[in-house]
Image (tube, rainbow, N blue to C red; front, side, top):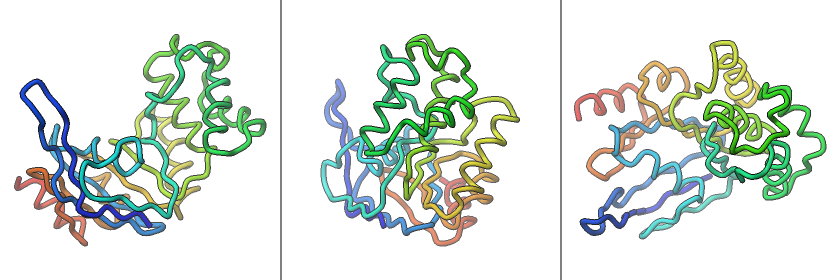
Length: 215
């Protein structure tokens, strides 16, 4: 379970401290798929970073009894001077898992060819996204964080990602951030909306979508 309790978050700007989230509450149970909706700049990415542990709340507490992925297809944590293979080794060590049996899978899934052995700084954004997604599939997580629709390649690669995530890992919890009504309806059992710094939780996805479009 992941419990977000009375969480608030500020960021310092040139015009002073700006509150992004205020007294947010959310519970994510094992195997549950929760959608998060919100306009651009509402705080969706901040919410994902807080859940993942990449950032700490300024107020409130987040309790985790499940392991969380980084946002899928997000390659911002890569060491740019290291090769793709060396980044696989590094990330596997951070998460306490062996890397020897993971390289072949990532090499096949990410379809980077010889670039897997080149520094990540030479990658395009799409190549980084494919590597990040592939690595997230070889580390065992209880909860996957999905920032926007996972679209890191052509339609064939998209279908491969869909199979790995939503079919082979159908028993895992997921937090899905998206502007796509169809995607939220298809993949989420309930949804929440970030509006005016608050998180509005709904047990019925269509109720969340109605509220989101009325904001």
